[in-house]
Length: 150
Image 1 (tube, rainbow, N blue to C red):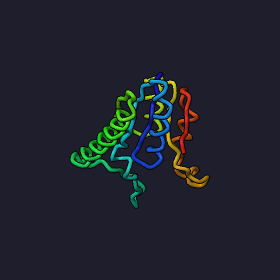
Image 2: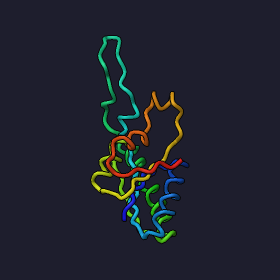
Image 3: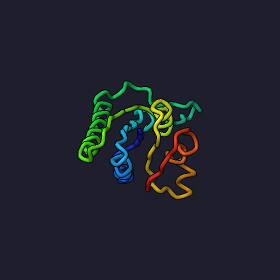
C-alpha cells in the first residue's frame, strides 16, 4: 500500500503528515512525501506598460535565491522523513518544481498511490473564488482517491 502525502511546511501540512502516519503505521504502508516549489517567475506578476505592452520578469535568475528555496524544500522533506522514521513508517521524498496543483496531479498519476493526502487551508468562498484552492483542484482532477485533511 502506498500513500502520496503533499506537504508545504504549513500547520495544515503537519496535520496531513500526522493523519497519514496514523493510517500508514498499522498498514505498513509506504509514504511518498511530496513538496512542490513554485518557480520564481510565478511570484512576480506581469505588468502592463503605458504602451500597452505586457512585461514579465525575464531577467537573469537569482541562482542563490533559487538554491535557498530548493534547500528549504529539501529541509522540509528531511524533517518529514525523520518523522516517518520515528513512527517506523517507510518514506521516500520527492521535490518537484512547478504549480502545486498541477504537479500534485502529475505525481499522483506517476506514482499511482492508493491514497493521496492533501491539506486544506480553509479558504472562505471569496478567497477560493479569487485564488483557487489546491485541494479543490486536486479533488476534481486526480484519478487517485483523495483525502483532504483540515
